[in-house]
Length: 127
Image 1 (cartoon, rainbow, N blue to C red):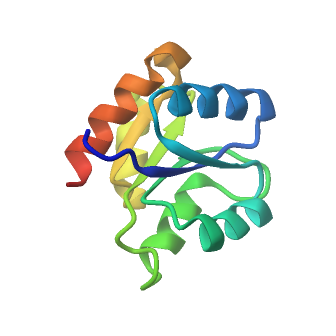
Image 2 (tube, rainbow, N blue to C red):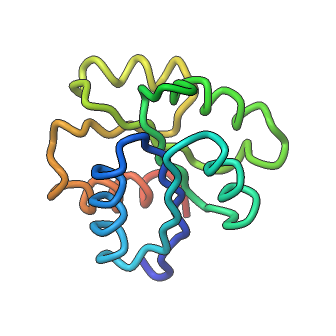
């Protein structure tokens, strides 16, 4: 990948969020992280991400709803969104497709595979 992209993470688990952020920053991505909807909105406006990774299940909003809202907004409709969850690929794929996500990532693959999987998804989705 020639230029590392700005990635915005949304995950309600602080520990998971920090691990994901560290893995992606080690890959050279510029990463902003949010643990709730208010932080996410602030980061979305200020950070201007080129890719969004959002958890599926969070207490204040579901990842599916995030995808749907962003894909209906003129300002964010073109931002690729990857939905991730602890669900298996088989469970997650139809959920991501129905929501309108550009990709999906199962946390069951382990944090050590996150960087490779995001690289592959980002390269297949954009540019």
